[in-house]
Length: 501
View 1 (cartoon, rainbow, N blue to C red):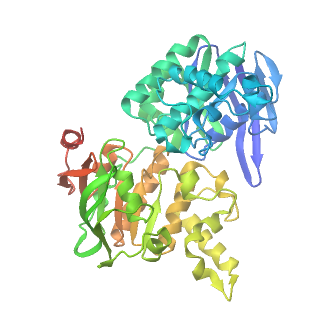
View 2: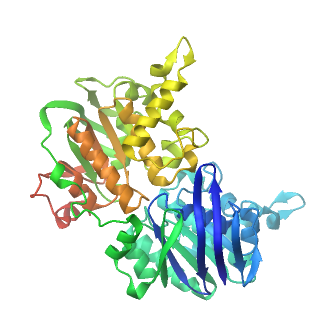
View 3: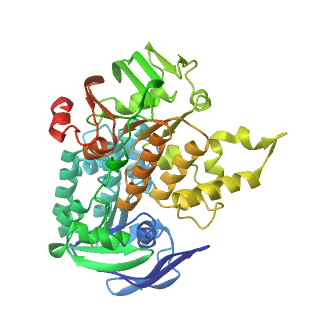
């Protein structure tokens, strides 16, 4: 149904795709795995028409095609659900679902909003999402927006006669278990009409769902495995070219924190509807993890510490002094860094270079008489690119073109190079492959050893247990239980879940 033959793609200084052979039949679910920077996203964008291939062929039903835009690809039945979502936040759900296809609702020069809302409800029913189509998209949770993305792609069912190819780029990264099960059920139900290319770093999901799995490394397909013969560890070795360290969370590097040095203290802070009576102390070298279900209040606590939300009651101290004005810039000046969940939107500035992103929070250090010392900025970036093994053609590369894992390293470098000694990590490994996760875990241990205090909202409970010195279980906006997590005596998954739900 859809095939790539010897497909090539180059960017300045980067050979992104190297002779890719890839095929998908009608009704198939094909998995695509590889490290961040392996070329998965580039391959997806070539299929979707966002990039044009430099060599080789793309064939639909055996006939060569060249999509010059995503619109052309969609008109041929190829749709994509992006990992870093493509919805426009200040538009309504229905405007996003039918963006670019509003003409069908126009009568006498005006959009019939009632008809558009009815059509949107039909699409939302496909993904079992009961929300008002007139809701402004920015008010939805990340998981809800992910389902709206899928509903948007499923409008192709009514617009295209032939079979569909739907590309899913990390669709489950922030979905709850029941939402993941819904997505998988939808995919299986749609196989009569659609084929799927499924990108995920959760290899157990890929093996469970896929008919065949392509493994990529350094821009090339290194293996194609039938799912019935696939094993997680074997795929991991092919992805990273080595055996995965059994001490995955670097527990052997965990050292006691400095109990006599408090970096951050929250004293009974409350924000109605978000959290209530939150009190905690973060010590130098401590990794303190907030665990809880989606919406429990963890992210709101982090954003309050960084000055993006203001508590109505309670007190906050940084390095023993009152926190002062509720302002992100003020928090940065006091040594707090924040790695947000949505790195593409809040973590980096696409269109700016790697070195510009790294120094963005410390411009005063690189300014002399109103003039930027760009040479010094570039030197700092080169040092950190080498230190963190960031895959970029140079410090001048557009940060928006890096893989997710390398973007995350740039964000971490921004705060570490600026001397921040309190780092807030909100799902720092979301959407990262196993190798990039190991790099992040190494950085967490390195920061802890250097006396940095880390407040972590982890991607999984295993990650929280493995990395933390201390765990606070948050439920309905309140801390329900504290756990000390020394090496060799960490709480179990059941211990945490018991107080989470």
